[in-house]
Amino acid sequence: MTKEEIFNKIAAIIADRFEVEQSTVTNEMNLQTDLDADSIDFVEFVLELEDTFGSEISDEDAEKLNTVGEVVDYVAEHQAK
Image 1 (tube, rainbow, N blue to C red):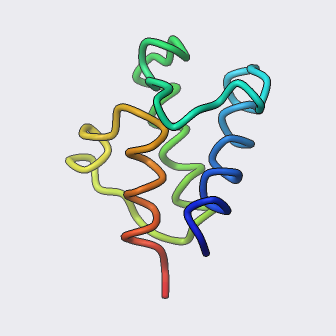
Image 2: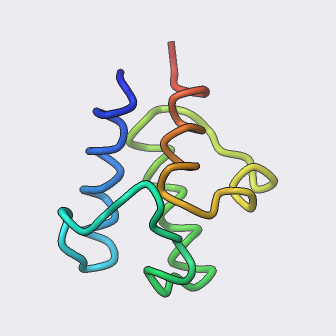
């Protein structure tokens, strides 16, 4: 899966979960400040990413993911082969 395909899937998840227009999602978008995601929102988002992409994201790694671009890069590096 290309980074563009990953980004599009993640943008769709964000649009659905955080009620924003998918077209407004950018790689620079900050998950906490731009989406006003609290810790529960973020955990649910990570769980949905795991289900969507078939790979586990450790709590330690999840804490390092701040922007949409970082999430895309992480998923691209860790996607199920």
